[in-house]
Image (tube, rainbow, N blue to C red; front, side, top):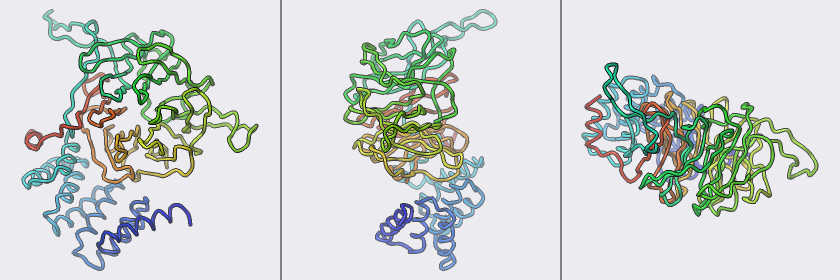
Length: 465
């Protein structure tokens, strides 16, 4: 029996144990494995048996929404709403498709109907993420006192103070939530900085005019930082939105103490090693690389020419480099699960990037996301290992999302002007930092995951549209 068949049977057994229409449950099981054709057939069969089956219409709408077919999704959700008008998740789904298909007036009507019915917190959170930020967000002022210049009107009057340097990005928050490491090209090349979030005291960690440093990652004890270094590219912003094995540039992973001292290369091999992340015990680092392995684990002495990015793991002393993925497409941006047993990463299927996971020692790869609406990048686990925060360009905007680690229960966290990248979580799961150009230049923002947007703010947000 192949892995896909086993997965389908396992999901189906679990769903049947929860009760419900067996035909609908079979359709859900197919949908969990990405088999949308079989899922649609099952939901249509359920409706043929019972034309008043609201759940079948709802699930059918979810399939069409995932396939970017707004017309059929709306028709299915409207039928489900007519049969089950009190089910808030159906009303939310209908409003969501209206919203993303550009019919904001009808979307607002559905959302206002939701708010008038005292919806549960989960519904409010999803509604907030569709229409703006789901939680309270503030910009972290990463500029120093010398990083501003005066702006004048044509008459010579001082108009405002503005940050004069281009971009701050690639943020990483320390495990205790006190420190922010980030990259800035304020000196015309990318250098790493460390800031105390509370006091805003700023320290430059790297001083290399001919090199760019970015993608910092804290060790679990907060005493070390891994980062990427490469030959300077003339002040260009360097965050990678996606894995790209076609990128010819080379890069090397370095380690240093949190104060910038004791900088040394982790890997002394030419190639492109990027996106380092520490294992929970701090003894290994996972990363993406397109450098060819000199020897395979299975056949010592043999060589392989790895033309695409793959996921590797290595001990922090630079020994025991091991390749974890073996695909003919790019795999990148790994993140370690808190239990140390899995690594999630970004991989490509049919020219769309999705989120996958693999055992920390290699083996079978499991796909976590499906659908045709956008690509998904930059996964990072929640501290309890139950959720993954990631970046998606669904609906033509780079926004932050969260989902269960099996790919279910997706919730949008941001829907603001500008793009959102590189999420990083504190160990307690309360603070999320990310980069965004929502204020023109790329800057660092902090999302307080203890402060969801209240219903009063949502009502005002909808009324002001």
